Image (cartoon, rainbow, N blue to C red):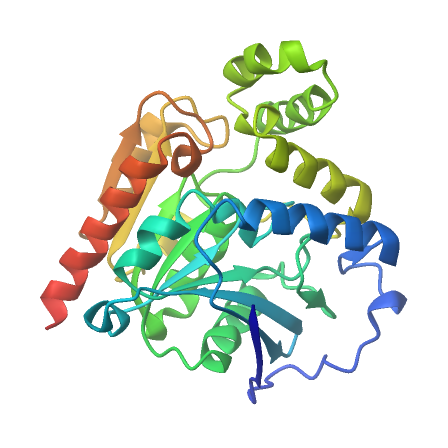
Length: 321
């Protein structure tokens, strides 16, 4: 892999000198050994997706953001507006392995490891406050030299993307939200599902397919994913509260083209409620419910979701030519 390094020069909040080990409100690895085992597990998942063309560390006011770059071979596709992927909580950019081949065949793709989650970014200050989250993401995009992007987020990454559309829209061509946070308060049923899926990773191999269907947790039957999740739990300590949803007044400020994809059996949001609510509050928003899936439509139906996302981005691009 090619590694390059580029530092963002914006620093609205002077927090870069904070020592991570001295803080209790930033994520951290419990040991170098467990971190390295987790990185090896992540690399096995990355290998399932498109070839990584390069990795880059971007310095921000909140820490070092690690970014993976993918890209198309065709020169015409290289000039298209890039996609930036923001993963869910407790994961890293490797979770996008079902999506990077199709997306990067069409246009440049950047996958960000969010500080505070078990990836290769290094957090030095919290970003859970909405204004700090928006500043961190804007500084990251600036450090990558990206002036206009299609921003895609899943779960907690969906909250980050939705928050950006509200607070930092200047660089955004569009936003795509995949069963996102930020629309409703996270309920008990979602946390029960998360913990049930984690415990199920320890189930006997013969039971895992049935549990995977029942819990809608593909991690249970994909060995590389299962190992990555288990090493993440053992290696990393997340230190942030659950983000609060945006208010209706905040949602109504969004003018960036928005595409919302919800799993019919989602336990994070109430799909029927949000598929009516979001287009009512956000002018021109597109919202769809995908059957046969819960919280991971981009994994369970990767080919179809990739096709829909690219069609949406192409329609946005065509309106700006």
